[in-house]
Amino acid sequence: MNHALALLALHAAVLLFGFAGLFGKWLALSPLLIVFARTTVAAAVLGLVRWATPGRRPPFALPLLANGAVLALHWVSFFAAIQVSDVATGLLGYASFPLFTLLLERPPGSASWRWRDRATALLVVVGLVLMVPEFTLANRTVAGLLWGIVSGFTFALLAVINRRHAAHRPAADIAFWQNLCAALTLLPVTFIASEVLRSTDAVGGREIALLLALGLVCTALAHTLFIASLKAITARTASVVVALEPVYGIALAFVLLGERPGARVYAGGALIVVSALVATGRRAATR
Image (tube, rainbow, N blue to C red; front, side, top):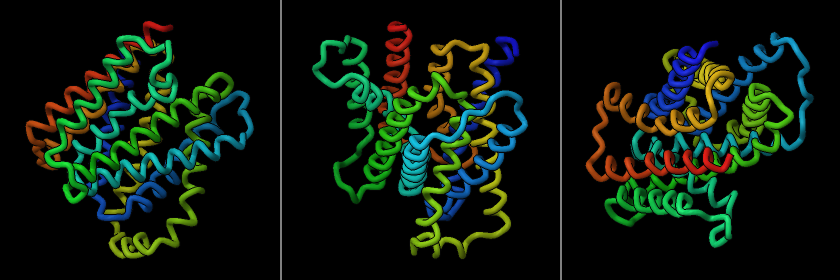
C-alpha cells in the first residue's frame, strides 16, 4: 500500500469511527444491547480474518479479558452519551481522552510535565466547561458530557494498557480478542438487565441491518483499514487524523440527522480538538 492509498484508508477508517456515533440515534435500543451486537459481529469477522491470515497467531492472554471489559464500558458509555444528548456532545466528551492519557502516563506535578501537557489539560477543561449551559444533572448536555467523559477515560485507559501488548502482539489480534472478550463480558448482563429486555421488543429487520452494519462496517472494516494504513503512515500523521473523528462525526450528524449544535458546543469542541492536536505534537516530540 503506497502512502496516498494508506492516507485515504486512514481517513476512511476515522470517518467510519465517527459514523458509528449516529447509530446511537438510529437504534432505539439499550446501549448494552447495541454494544453486545457490535462486538459480537466484529469479533466474528475479525476472527475469520485472523484465521485466514498466514503466520503465527499468539495465544490468548488473560489480561486481554480485562481489556475487553474496559472496551465494553467504553462503548456502552459512548452510546449512552449520544442517546441522552446528541452526537456532537457524545463525541466531544469522548474526545477528552488526551487529558486522561496524559494523567495516566504522567501524574500531575511530576517533573516530566511540559508546556504541551499543561496546554492539553487547560484546553480540554476549558472546552468542556464552555460546552456546559448550566451545571445541573437534569440538563441533557451535562448528562451527555459526563457519559462522554467516562467514554474518554476508558478509551485512554485502554490505549495505555494496549501499549503493553502491542510490542509482541499484532494490532489485528488485539482487536479480535478485545471485541470477543467485550462480547463475553456483556453476555450475562445483556440478557438479565430489564432495560435490555424491554428494548428487544423494538428489534426488527431494520434494527438487525443497522447492528450488522455497525459491527461489519464501522468496527471490523474500520479497524482493518486503520491497521492496514499504519504500514505506510507515521504514528504522528495517524494521531492527527484520529483527532478529526469528532469533526467527521458532527458533520455526518449535521447532514444525516439534521443536528445543529449551538455556538457553545462548537467553541468548546474546537478547543478539545485543538488539545488533541497539541497532545499529538507532544507525543511526536518525545519519540
